[in-house]
Image (cartoon, rainbow, N blue to C red; front, top):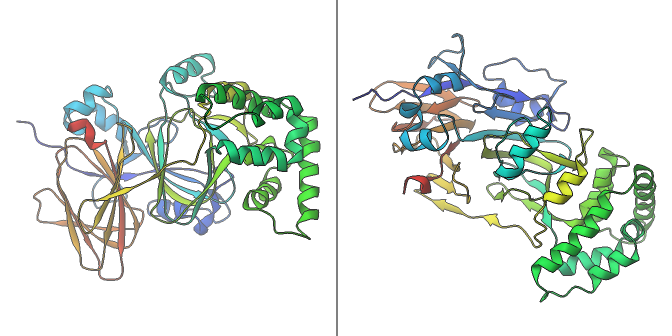
Length: 423
């Protein structure tokens, strides 16, 4: 019988995208500083934990931050069935199926969607410099702070209100398209409604840069004038904030089409393939299939693939589902999205408390977000001290025990393969 590979401490990567929070204002920077120096003037946007080549994690000997790093992916490939478990190794061809992140968002990310597997493969073949892999990217965000996002198209009646109350949109789309949408009823077949929504959204997003610039300027002037005599709506205030971050960008106006979601700490949102979204502000834990495929069309200086985005969207309407947590015990809450690749546990320990995480048939990753304490592996008698920024990769069939220190609450997030795969 083969020995079970032991958990390993990781050194992780960061992405310094310009929308990230700066220096120690960023939780990403605080986590990264556990094993690396940080630049107080730099934005720290994303903390990546996993095997994706755009931000790979490497191994450190347990208890030491000075050992020679070995890529996590390389270590897994040496013995994938033992490290990942037979079922995970077979299904995902010897690779870790999820990418685990922490995000610190200071200004809006792009209006974007992630392709399904079929489209991801086609995009990667056509333009590998932009679409760097052939995988889909369903994802889930769990709020660490108040977390604001745009997600999915608003409902039929709300969009009708927008089309009549935002004259800049009517001017850009034209009366014919607007009137066609205004004639839609809630009882109409959804496929017919989607065709009309797709036509008006594509018309809006295909507007020339000159007209977009002029329309954004008109919107800004109108809202600033009207704010002196009435209270602006949340969407109008958001549009003004987005205009400050991304002047003359089509995303400022198209933001009116989407649900404005505000998560409180602990709430979660899952986003499937081909659903439009844009994170606005706040900090979150994020988990997704191992991919970095993003189709962008607004609120970004990066490459915009407007026609691909407009053609790929589902055009579902209505407020997105807020994912419910399932308590496993007094210390562990589980977030289970409708994707095989991942689920996430939130572990909260008061000073002196302990919790055992039973062995499972797939791999998992732990990240300490607040507090300090210790981690005990399998049947070992010795413990390793843990603190903010410590990250552990736990191979399949390992039981671990976490204990909080005596100074305050310890919060740990654990990502693993969705349990339904093993049921």
